[in-house]
Length: 146
Image (tube, rainbow, N blue to C red; front, side, top):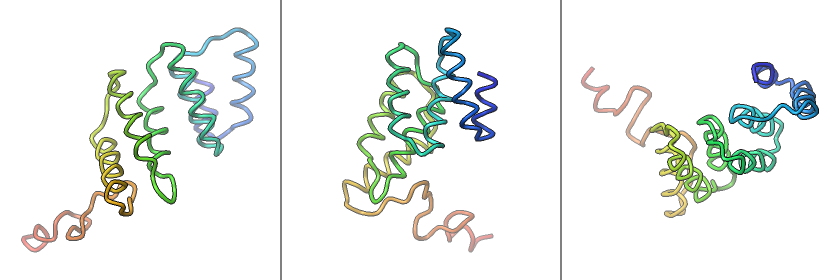
């Protein structure tokens, strides 16, 4: 997994695939981290459907997917254009909670914002935490007091 992680971080997709093939040939099993790296490889290679197949393989192996895997898959649904797949993102978030995987508040807010945007038929901007009256340092009223 350390070598695989290095390949992913360096975006050495061919090296990572060769390593995975070698692991398979030598009978080296996958743990949750191996599956997470495989998901990252698919996402970085522009193959999101492959990432979702790997996610299912991880679940079928009765392993709890790591937090990073969930983040990558949920964020993919939220970034989908022209509209986010908010329902799929919410479903994954619920699976994440059911697996007792730590859910950070930003991810939870992003999913809730996407679900609301779809329900209200309005645009969803991924990661937008500022309302119309807020600037880079918070609400405009706070800036006036500074």
